[in-house]
Length: 305
Ligand code: MLT
Ligand code: MN
Ligand code: ZN
Image (cartoon, rainbow, N blue to C red; front, side, top):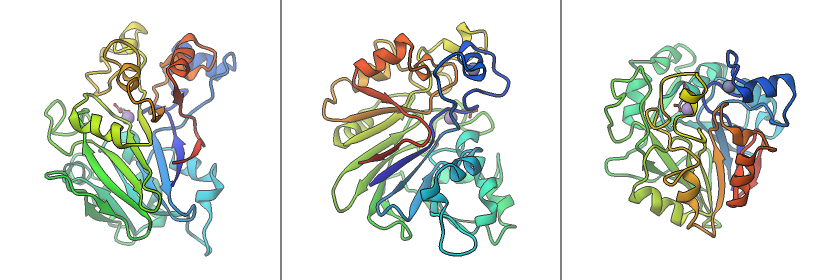
């Protein structure tokens, strides 16, 4: 399967419009080698023609225009995006559903928890009904977990992995976890048997996450913050990464340590916040990540799993 990183930054993107943290300033002024990044999304395909978009970021228009393989179509209108999955109801993963309105109807796959948020607290699905009937909802079942296939994107199968992250501030499930508020995905190429595990928001590790990492050939996982108190240290806010449902990259209980035992796995950090020093390829933190055998995703990164 082909995996295309549409956007590798966390919510806000990089540089974030109103952020003057050292990373954003250096990127804006061109005084570091850190590349700008758009907000969190990937697309996957088995045949390189038919793609499923996983998470729809507010930057989706720019992301499609930047990737000719996904922009192309046979008729006067269209794109290679045949279907959309969203893994939670966060702004950075769902605002693009508004931007895609000209291409509706489209099949949308999400859990019941996410559908409820996107109908009530942030009613994008209700609004979009006015554009050619809007999104056709297909439920991702998590209780119990059920694998599913997507008719328009042949050759791949998808299995949800419920994750403990945090629901968005506007959700009734903020700090009130329900199974299905947030999922990771195990995506299997049915011909080759190769597996991608995608989990841009990982707040807590459990047995299912370990099993998913164990079964995968490639993992694209939460690289939001380097340190849990990074935003506070920089004077940018009062929240810890863990409050927002993100495990930090460094530290004894961090992502690098977690990934260490999985020696056969290709490991890629994604959903990287603009404060995270790993965005600068010349930083010592970036060097530590690389020394641990881990890659840092960038926009337009195309990999074969
Ligand atoms: C998150 O993952 O916590 C989000 O990026 C927050 C946001 O988009 O505002
Ligand atoms: Mn996010
Ligand atoms: Zn910043």
